[in-house]
Amino acid sequence: MKFLFIIGVEGAGHSLVRTFFEDILEYNWIVDQGNWHTAANTLWNTHVNGFDQLRLIDRIQHGLQYGGNIKYLFDSTSFPFGQPRDTLRRPDILLYKEIIESCSIEFKPIFINRNLSDAIKSGVRRKFAGYTLQKKIIEDNYMYIKNQLKKIPYLRLDFEHVILNPQETVTVLSNYTGIQPELFKIEIKK
Image 1 (cartoon, helix red, strand yellow):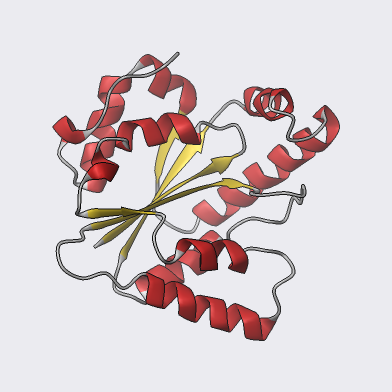
Image 2 (image 1 turned 180 degrees about the vertical axis):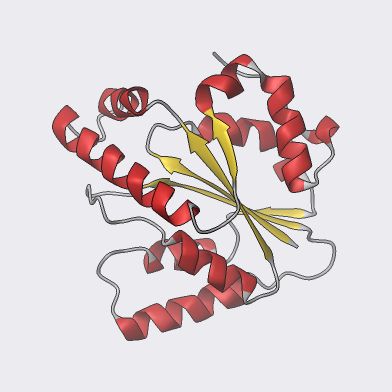
């Protein structure tokens, strides 16, 4: 089983990448934001104490238990996530990898890279925060993601390249995930 985890700063293009998986998420061999998802989001809250953290990790591990024909688990999150605005409300990618792999599931992160000024503008346009705060949030989380990803294998998708080369993106996603290329959706709304 593989855990496909789409990550990036706010405004990086999560919706764009999810579009490629839209038809795939309808199959019965993939689970989108399953039983683990709520516990994982609670775990990444900056105010979780040690005991609650262990309890949540246990809930995530139990939530990852799928049998039968399930081949893929799918999740995505922006850095940070949720409200109120908190730069530190973000997943610990390395801990998440450790939790997932402890369940004998292959961790396959997909990092969406976008020009930071465009990601900042996207967040401000959607009223996540004012420009100064949004800039700090995006820059801090971009460095956090990059520092964590230095330690593990991952796939990097550049937003601008994905927009211009959707067919090539399908090939790259297929090679990385093992999902047949004809199952990916190629329509990109520009």
